[in-house]
Image 1: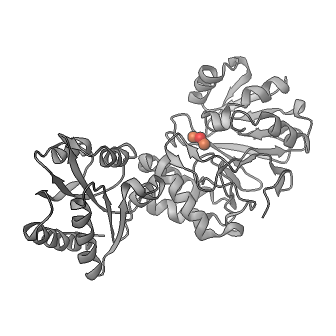
Image 2: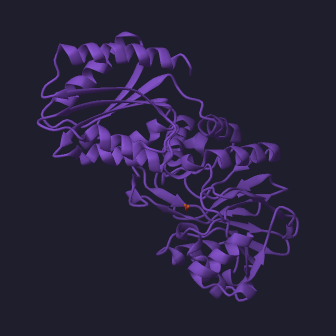
Image 3: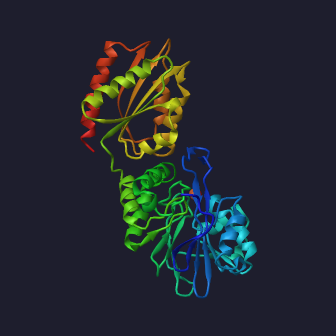
Length: 398
Ligand code: FEO
């Protein structure tokens, strides 16, 4: 399906006026975007007033104005809602306020500070909203949900009461710029896969806040969830059920093995462990790190209870590629419960100590360390067999 050039009607008076950025390939200079992304801005036209909910990434201001103009005169916008201050949704807010001289920015209390700090928005043009606020557009009422730390401190969600449409900005988002607008059109399964990658990078560190917000959303019982990236969920339970699992640390019975190998020792140990576990009927996802997509690995971290890192010592420390993965798991606050290390060295170790230091602060238990000087021999294979038994036993907890 070709990428849409125009706008899209979600409900009477509710329009998608965003941008599909199909050739963007990285987000936050961290996570690959295999399907690009979209910046979903929404226009809500009441009988009296008009609100624009979120805007678009820098560089797409003209496209936003063009799409708004299909429905209303952009100079007549009354409200620009800033659910979240990150520039991919908020940078064009100033541009829209400049175009619409009477428009006010709606934001939470922390959002007001952010709008002034990041975008130099005049405080006289900002109305602070909270969970008691109702904004009447004429037959369409906007209310707001406090959603701090999802994923910045100032985040709010906007709810269109009459149409029961929730606009939660990044929450429930996915990076995709396909032609279809709805998850069920693109395919729920494929949409969930992309939403999980998105969750891994953006929402996984904030699982507690994410669970609170998921509960609030369930109580609202929206008919449609329209996030600011990717597909729109018109069967909200599809994504709500997944968010309950991911935020609630509902693990799959599986093991994630991520290894780096320079001369084959760590690879031999990693593959031996994989083979034994597979024979036991355990699901194993194994990544040869230098040849792997870091997004796939981050996605696996969401619901893998056990992480095995295979890495040699380089000079006096851990191979830098393995260090990166340990740091990634820690930075994204992966829910990993158990870890194990498979490591080799030529003349002096150091990888284990450094890896332990990198993982310090994660609430995980190290099941075992299998270390070898040079290539692995029977003694290490025996230890790996014992490790596999331990892994099998621990997996019974999940
Ligand atoms: Fe899509 Fe946190 O911005």
